[in-house]
Length: 207
Image 1 (tube, helix red, strand yellow):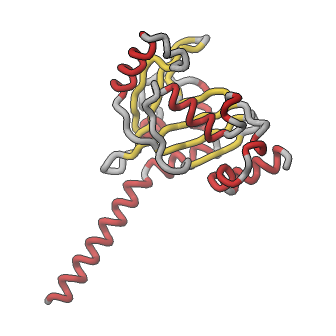
Image 2 (tube, rainbow, N blue to C red):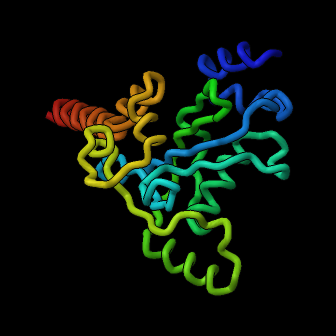
């Protein structure tokens, strides 16, 4: 299977392709990135960002890194490992990725639901590990949650890295983020309407 065919399959069947193809099918990928997303109880979508020192300055970005030999050419392993390391080993993934795209730049991009982690917990663990000389993989220096809506509308007041800005403009990634932004709130409204209708039906039956 050539790279062009694989990219097409990933675009059409993003999650299924990751779970059903052998690791060697992804031999050409070089990097993996994750946009971690968490929904609050009221359905607000939050995104975890990390602050990182780059050559041109300090920026806020998502979680990204090169594949490692121990990843066995599996982008899911690369993505989870990088995000786990860069969150000071605090991030926990939920289920399958919400989105996957294999870009022409040999990067596999994921949007993935995660458990909420207090940024202070990440800071504390990073400090402990660095003090023990075990923090070399923790490239982020700080962490924060922002609402996905603010991120999409450019209202975070954070200096975002150009790679993240590019993803927010990407014609494949942005529509997915826009859909996820209000997904849980819409589901909550639908469930509420169903409960309301059932309650009304029950009242009519009683009377």
